[in-house]
Length: 310
Image (tube, rainbow, N blue to C red; front, side, top):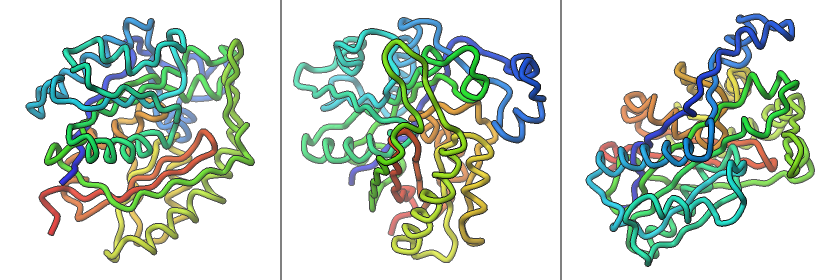
């Protein structure tokens, strides 16, 4: 059975306390706590710092799962922002960090907030076809492309990386019923052009969550979840985004919030929350993960802890 492991993660090496920054724009610490969900965010100081974080995550992941680099059949890196040149792809650089075999596919996926679930789907298929484990890495160092004068993005985004293994009887969770959607009429709600800054329309994103994401989640649960109650692990865009999603779902749906949240880490937010909430998730009969954002896109999947499967 193809499973995925408990993810390992690292935040950027620079810790940023946003309290004083928020005050410059007339925003209080309560604003950070109640709307963003954290007073702290993190940033990678350099590309070398990013590579070191990836190497650390992958090393810990291999050790905890008794897997070595020579066992891996594919490396998938999910992310959009780059701290280095666009060429070569980051997965090729990751390949150089360990003793991966030459017969190993290296692939970058240019996805954002739904990227972990998209990557899981790709990794599942590759692990099944190659008969070797897949290594899935998420990495979105957005902070280098933020406008220093844009308080809304500077207070929100945080740099992080995560690493997850997917393979036959490797890990703790299975996946089923992947569903992916794209709403390209609002593609410019979050965009970045080379040489400029990230642009984000927060109101449109929040409206997207209420008008599109929540109904899609409700339909998915109705069609795929047999239990009377459902646990949902969402992309942690911010506290207000997660709370808005929770209010738009039925009373029997429990939308989780990770109290360890340290800023919107884009494709890394779901794997970070899986790691932080592992005890709660492994005690569930099943849970739904949903990622949504850049594209605009939404991806949903059902996960079952391995020891809870019939």
